Every structure is written in C-alpha cells, then in structure tokens.
Amino acid sequence: MTIGLDLDGTINNMLEFWLRWLNNTHNTNVQVKDVVEWDISKVYPNLTTAEIYKPLETPEFWSEVSIQEDAVQVIERLRQENHKIYIITSSHYAILPEKLKRCLFANISFLSKEDVIVTYDKSLIRCDLLLDDAEHNLIGFQGIRVLFDAPYNKQATIFDFRVSSWKEFYILISELTAGAPRPPHSRIYQYKAGRGMGKTAWLHQMIYDTTHGVSSVITSPCYLITNSKYDFDCFCRSYFERFMEHCPAKQFELNQQVEKNARFFVDMPSTFPFNSQAFDSFRNAFISRDHLVFLADFETTNWHSTH
Image (tube, rainbow, N blue to C red; front, side, top):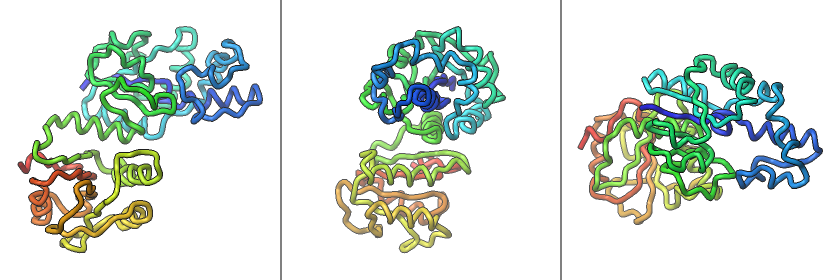
C-alpha cells in the first residue's frame, strides 16, 4: 500500500508548541483543547497575523517541536512491512528546510528528502491512503481518507476513517491490508497488530473513553470473556481489573440470553489460542448472533480463514 502522511499536527505536535511559544511571548493561556476551529487566529483575536505566525518562521522553534507518540515506531513498522511511505506537506517554502531538518529528519532518521512531497493541493497526490488532521486536505483525494483526530476537526465529515492515535492507525492499516470481508452474518471487528504495539492498552483506552463520555463506541451492557467458563491458559489480569473499574461488565456464559445491544470483549491469544476447542465454541456461538465483538491481539490469527 502507498501511504501518504501529513506532517504538521499528524506526525508532529506542532500546535502544542506553537501555542506554548505564543503564550510565553504574549502572556496568554490558550490550550490545545481551546482550538476548535482550523483558524488559530480565532483564539488569539488580539494578535496580528504576523505575530501569530512568527514562531513558525523561527528555526529554533522546529528544534523544540516533538513527534507524536508512537509515530516513529509505526512508520518504521509500516516500511518494514513493505508499505511505501511518503510525507505529504503543504508547508510554506520559506520554513520548509528548517522544519524538515530540525523536526522531521532529526527525529525520524530513516526518512530522507526523497520521501517528502510538498503540495498545497493534496488531491493531486496518487496514494492509496492519506492520513491528515485537516479536513480540507482530504477533499478531492481519490484514495482512502483517514482523519487524525484533533479538537479542531471534531465536526469534520469528509473522511472514511478517523483515528485518535498512531497505534490505532497501525491497526487500521493492518485491517485494510488483510482485505478479507467480514462475514455477512455477524458483526465482528478485528484489530490486528504485532507484539508490543499496545493492543490491550488500546482496547482498554477505548473502553475508558466511552465510559468517561469521550466516545460513544462502547455502551453497556458489556460482557468480558474470562477463564471462568473455559480452560484458558492465561488472561491479562491487570487489563481485567482495569476493565471492571470503568466498565460495568458481567460474566458471560455461552448459552445464556443476552441483551440485544450487548458488547463482548476478548483479548486473544491471551484468552485462548487460535484453533483451540474453546475458540471454536466461541466462534460458533456468534455465527448467528448480531453482536459487536472486539477481538484484540490477533498477531497470527485470521478469523476469516475459519469460515
């Protein structure tokens, strides 16, 4: 897959440091969460355009801007998996050299200028997928449009997928690369990623966000599959305990009647090994049920090969 990645606000944390520079210079206290529109001048009504953009024109600024959490590891992993990666940026020509040198290449040493494409119209780019934090950059793009979540794009509608972290983006790419359609008789969601990519932590964060009003993906009632009914070798105990702290979960029995909107959570293969009798029992139980099931930690498992 040929993947285009936006730089500012997607690979790096430019906005956070931009606000810090402006706040320190002008004695203001604007936070990232306050920027709910693309135009940053809306939160600095007393500053001129020149004053607002001055930090971006300062070479030292780009030495301070950090890279998003997990971005380096995910980009490197995608390259190792033979995806073609290009940095697609609409940066102004006057600041581009220092930005690339001090921010991009200084932090992601395996990238070079041959991996960077500069354009103000990203719809001209011929990639399979584009990841960007700006909705207007996705307009007209002919591939898969992925929006990187930010406070200023909450109202966006022009995208195919929205991700809130680089780990979630990696999981999405893994799903899209698999290319196998989900069985039409069941609503089963797979999240595949390699070891050490924090799949369990990501699943817990999704649950936590939902139960704290950040997201509406997961709702009660919830059922957590544990080794109370099956002969599972192990289960992530810390994950189970944190799940119970934030999400009112119930023990699940295979033949019991469950609510229509019930959600199920299984951590695999921590819970049970693929192609085991327990896995077959669980899979067969849901072939005719219309329940949403999140199956995490699928490094070597392919659900679709079992149908």
